[in-house]
Image (tube, rainbow, N blue to C red; front, side, top):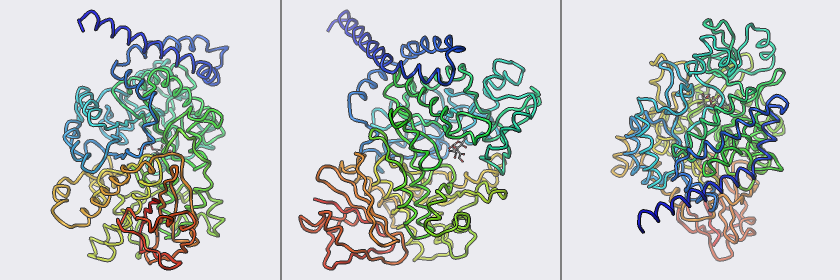
Length: 639
Ligand code: OTU
């Protein structure tokens, strides 16, 4: 092909892409308009809406061509995020291998373990001292020097695409740091930018808010407002005092943040993690979480992004009550209009409850209570992340079990935070609020599951048990349907890192205990020695491989819970056409027995003994009973 016809072809392709953009915009326009005017009433904001209409084509034009092509490919194929082939890992770049370049060098490690989806913790510029691990944002797009340059990031996303690795980055949509350019101008008295935040001359309105607003970080950042002497005003700071809440009642804020969002996806980000999105709208007299306006705003972001960059998807970081989480997938009648993916925080918290109580009733009760998710949406299944573990269970369900919710939560805090001699867990308490008795838990998976104590006390039996628990919990996230996400280091049983206690900018925040450095020395020896670390790694590596070999693991909205009649056991089935995978887990330290007639009834023996993928052994069933070893997990395949 000669130059001239090549140019013609490219020009034609660009025209086609533009037509498709216009079509997408036309499809979403009625809804965009509806959501926009629901937040910013038409009689005052017609002009702002016109601004949005001019902004969208501009953002589309600026989107890189290779991403436009990828967008079209993704629209025309099945939802990649529901695939059985996905396996995620979350990490701090500086705790993993120094910087972005260092991370890129470790692609072979990801391949070895089977990781092909990465959530990197914030890498953009932030204040020097405390910055909430980068969740206090100085700029949404500028890479912080300590991680490298923008070029390094573009190199990385290119290398990821070449290796089939998806990238998730945060969009800290609820707040900026107090050093963000808008905050700086606000401090200097610029009225326009004071209006980008919730700023008040005196404490009258803040006092009204405080009547019903809970506290997110009561120990280190009590209250929800901070006095800023430079501007002689109060500003809303729901999280830390240096994180200023953005005022989305101002449409300018929405328009600027939409631009930041699209630009972030233009860097090659596949999944945007909408941080703390439950907090996006504030209203006096409410807890200012999960408000209908927050949903409208998220939907507005989504509908616009879908028109401009349809290949990028959103993850809801809503660590809220189970029935509230599913709402971030979108409303019943227009499902999928908000986020495609959400953290399965309910499953996460419930698994920790089951480990501590060695029982599964609350797990069943709560999961059955959660409304079904939309079929085009999926979960991120994880056992812990970089944050704390909150005890977000529904009180009435705890009560139904005959337990007292307050006493039960106190027991869990005691169990995990070293207040019970017999407990194997070595976690720390996070943000204990004596006013309410609420508290959360921090710790690495291995430390919370007993490995730290086992190693310190040289207790072989405890060590065995803890390795099994680590594999069990991760195994459930691999089989449950959705994207499994492992925290870097947990794959080799990394213990708590107490060094944060010596760092002035970190010591008030015990979440740092569960953000350890990646231990490359241990990783070098994984294949050479038989250590608990290598056993955990090889077990998980194997399970990940198994997951990718059968599409029954993909999220086809095919999950069924089964009661086994034994309160220590958890069982669920995944099906796809005639195929079936039956997962059975024992949460007890003793062997447990279940009746097996129902397994036969489900058809698992119709072609002889089923294979247990975990042990790679056929499961003999001579008696009417099935015995499960302590913390054993079965993955039975229906042939
Ligand atoms: C998120 O978490 C991030 O994951 C945290 O690392 C940040 O500190 C925070 O936002 C502020 O940017 O309070 O303890 O769902 O649980 O959004 C974690 C509500 C947090 C919160 C969650 C928040």
